[in-house]
Image (cartoon, rainbow, N blue to C red):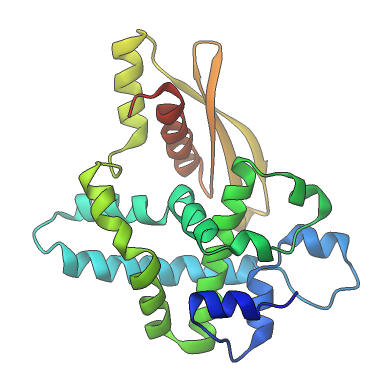
Length: 229
C-alpha cells in the first residue's frame, strides 16, 4: 500500500513510513496474511487515545475558561467519541487505505465506523512518535477543533443515555434497557457492543471500550433513529 497520496492530502510526510503503515493495519489483516512482517495498530491506538485526550483537554481548558469540569468533560467526550472520530477519519479518506481482512472489508456499517475511529487514534499515536506533540496539536487544530462550536451549539455534548430515557418515557411511556450482546478482546483491551431496547424492540447498538461508553453510543444512535434529537 502506497500512502504518499494520503500524506499529501493531510499535509504530513512521515519520517518512518512503517509507523504510518502500522496505523492503518487492522488485526484481521495480519490474521489473514500471516506472512506479513508488520504489526497491527492496537498499540498505536492505545497511545493515540491518550495523546488525543491530552491535546483536546488542553484546547478546551484554554478555549472555555469559565466552563466547569463537568462541561469540559462532556465536550471532550463528544469530540473524541467513535461517531466524531469516525466521521473525521472518513472525511480524510482513511477508509481507502485500511488494511483489513476480506471479511472486515465487506462490512461498511457501524463496525466500519468504529474501525475508522480506532484508525485515526492509531494515526495520532504514530504521528506523535514520528513528529512529537506539536504535530498532533496542529493536526487536531485543523481537523478536530473546528467541530467544537457546532457540538456546543447543538448540545451534542449532552448525556445521550439520560436524554434518550427522558424522550422514551415522555413519548412512549417506556424506560429503555441495555444488554451487552458482544464482548471481544483481552482483559486489558476489551471492546463491548451494547444494544438498547424499548420493551422488546431493539432500537440501536453501540460500541466502546467500556460498557458505559457503548451504552452512550447506543443511546446516541437510538436518538437519531427515533428522530428525538
